[in-house]
Amino acid sequence: MVDKKIPVYETAPSTLTFFSDCVRYNRPCKMPTLAKNWPALEKWADKKGGKEYLTGLFNETGISVYTDALYDIEGVETRKFSFRTDKSKMMTYAAFLEKQAA
Picture 1: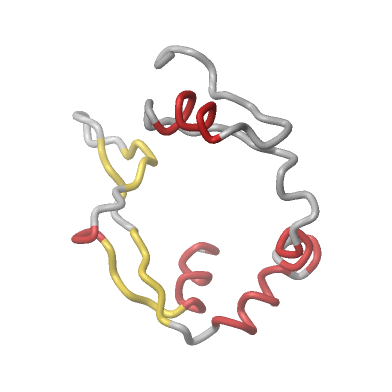
Picture 2: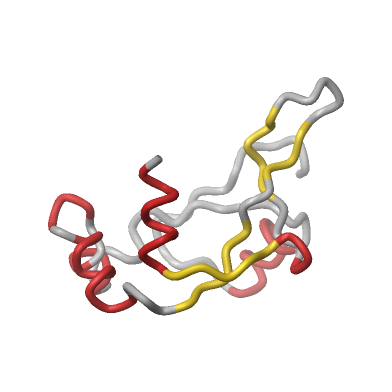
């Protein structure tokens, strides 16, 4: 299954299916319709002022951010990020948004 496409679920898979298709192989799965009624889908949407909403909630809150990109042998950034705890740093949510906009 490692070489197969990412599983896509239109309805919630059973625990066994989810474990067998995704967790066991440590690979992502896509569930595009499962959060359609989730309030955050509306509140956090960029087109509906999501950035302003989240900034209002978390502006000066400290968050842990992983910022070190991994590089391939030629030194080219692969855009894959490390989630090791020794590669994280604390910054405010406002600083995080500022960094993302740059």
